[in-house]
Image (cartoon, rainbow, N blue to C red; front, side):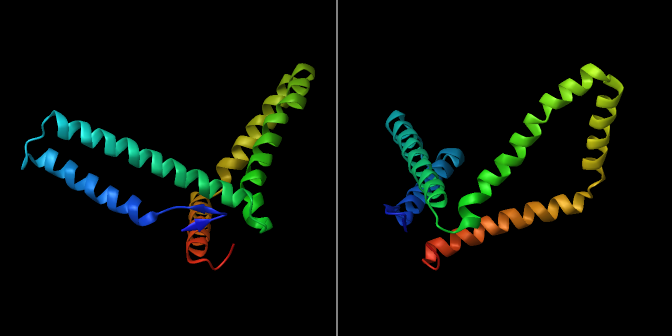
Length: 147
């Protein structure tokens, strides 16, 4: 897989994962005794796989950030902007609280009730859509449909 000039050998990562799982199964079932050398080898494989997965994760993040598609390159920043706005809203809320604590408490309670009024099915739908979008974008990039 080639993402934004970064080559990821998915086959090697997956075959390494398969061998690691076989070794772990052997260790758990006890079909083969594990000596110190085998335990060290397993630990090394785990470290290598963690490193490979971290490299793959970072390459995907970099590819999404450098994407020319505005929906892809702006999805995470837009979510963060919403969070920033909510955090920055604490400044005027502090001023409102100092002037009228009852009003500030009513605003906070109202906001909380508004969020609780959103049906849980809608949250689930949003989560499924967000995860589905991410999965389909990944498939498109792997297949080379979009760059």
